[in-house]
Length: 216
Picture 1 (cartoon, rainbow, N blue to C red):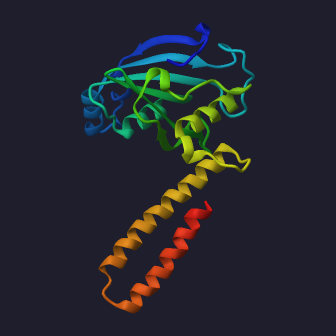
Picture 2 (cartoon, one colour):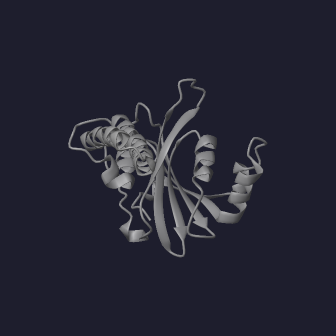
Picture 3 (spheres, rainbow, N blue to C red):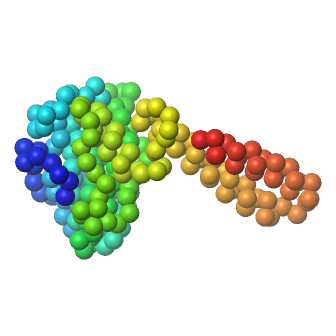
């Protein structure tokens, strides 16, 4: 799946009900777990205790989960629920009929502490053959390995010529996504506007937004 030492293998099946038996999980989310997921495996643990890696400052270990699906899609809320339940950084491999997608979110410790995490937007690959997954362990400590996993999965979205932290790359992408939402809303507004003067004003705003997106 990913070339990892045997020492990282965990290969434990996790009952999916473990993630929805919590009383705070909505009936709708419980239904998604039941309908969309066939089985969940905790495949690997990447950590200084299982590989020749130095400890990280923010990432203690990385878990590799394989989720076999009943259909070629999985609601993102499922991954978010699992990420909330497991106090470690996770790379998800979704499998359907022999094809794979790799998913992960930028996950950082919450200000409140207590093993709580703030889970950001998710990134994922296309559906690929197992051998085509763009994942490899790259780095000398767990922090760097995790950062590179996120960048590998996100692809061009988080690539930059600047020497910037993953946190800054993710924040820049979030800003870009928000600006694109504003662009779409503004374009819709322009199409509905009947007054020429107002159309001109809105088009000036549109050009400014497009320039901001290009600069990011």
